[in-house]
Image (cartoon, rainbow, N blue to C red):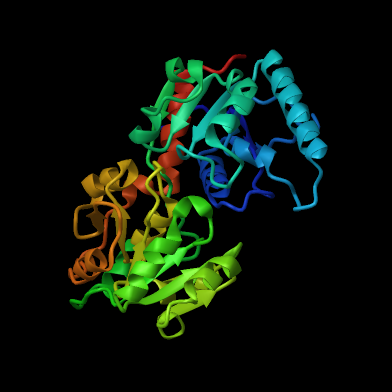
Length: 346
């Protein structure tokens, strides 16, 4: 049980600017455990913090708008780096929360990004990994020798259904009859060949692509069955509508081989949907945790024949146990690591 209620934690990027729910979910859960959590501001207006948790450094390489000049981004990175150094000089411990092996958004060649971000990683005191596979990757020099802990990725259940509610959805045998792709236009997700395989297999397919989906749809629309099989959505799904989209009749398909974690997979499991994914690190870990009924593995490349076979397997009539992925549990594990494993400086 976490005991230190005097801890003051800053998070970057802040909850107000992060489009990913993890920052908000973990921050709220930590506050519920009795600690102080605030958004860290590079302008230096925060009071002293015991710990600063860095989530997505790649945000410093992403412009607020497509027209933002490169020098503006360089200035922002320099400002954040200087403020990080100041925070460390005042005794703040810096923790990197390693969500994944690769940046969530395209920031250029990975090796170039690693080299450019090295000054930031040299300031890190400890690491929280969201799974074992991320920890084992060769990353930023001294990072591998730092104190660390490995926790489960928090699930993104915002306004959804509980495990008991999920059980009522799974009370009759069925097999998935439709496929779903979330944030499909992100280049690293390699969605296009997987969606094409769904079309060629005759599978009804939902494609959600809030950013960049037009080009993806243009490429796929050349297939003669595209319009009859693909249901394209250019906006994110409202959280209150999620139970209608997911459920046992939907299989969420991932085709990304270079990632080590997937919040989307946990999203799917939270709502009783199976996950079809390539045999790579994150999927194999989820396979060990939840079994082959919920996590259906294939050897790349994905094909229509593979999809047909995996879609024919019945959905389990018991909900997956996500207790260790609940934000309060994950937050407690991180706080215990800070209290007993990191020993923040006074």
